[in-house]
Length: 351
Image 1: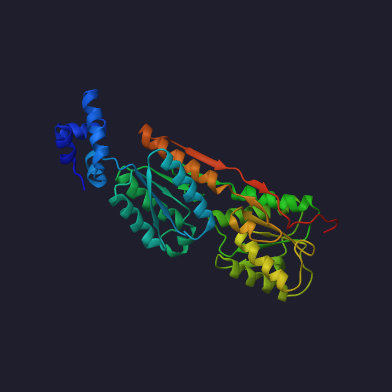
Image 2: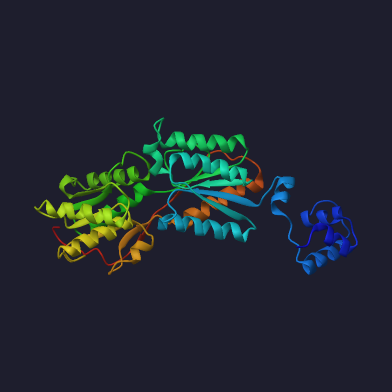
């Protein structure tokens, strides 16, 4: 493997001159610069990035902390951020934390790797594990580590940390209201939901608030018998919750709003197992707009949170901070939901 000394010897210049050319610092004549670059290419020389980052205090790397790498929404976040950073000469390091403790240690690990900045993806699943104040405390502790190291960070998809200067999040409440409005406009009045059990706060709480607000606005009562409560995120848990609702008997809703697309897939499985047709017997609307919405036949009618746009916006926000080196107060962005038409809602009268 070629070294900087090999390049210097071949180009007949000093190692300092090679360093100046590669780092674009200090004066070097054009003739020497071209000679050095030609030798770098001929030898296939690659600088030691770790050593270079220590000298320059710049690694051209950003960290991304996430909790559910298998979640399609997180995959959309990461792919859009990676594409944005890559086009601008930045690399990413992912850290997948599976607990409150590893989320904190993950921040330190990324800082140890000299990331220039950090994007923190939604951390709601750790709230119950924090006995000292919940999710806001977790975010503040992580934020404190970043501030101490003078590394900027952007929070994605969480309304519990709006005191932070830099965040991008989706309008989950608006998306839930949009779903109910659409069902009512299609003639439905008996509307149930597949919901998350601990919906006290975070993005799940926003969906709950949006659902209830829209139902009140249309003069509709939330029927507790039509609430399918899910205690673990996933298709199988949603299927079981929908089956429990069906086992209670009585009148069924004409439509269901599902708090995410995985819940919608599980509900559809349960209804079809019991001989109910979607949408002829019961209509379904999902939320998120990820790949689950294309895993049903017909395709799921859903509300997209525009995760790719959110990820890109977060990457753009962080890169602006890194390049401008000027802290920006109240740097907030709310991403509007987008309706995705599918085939799981039927229009009806008196439903």
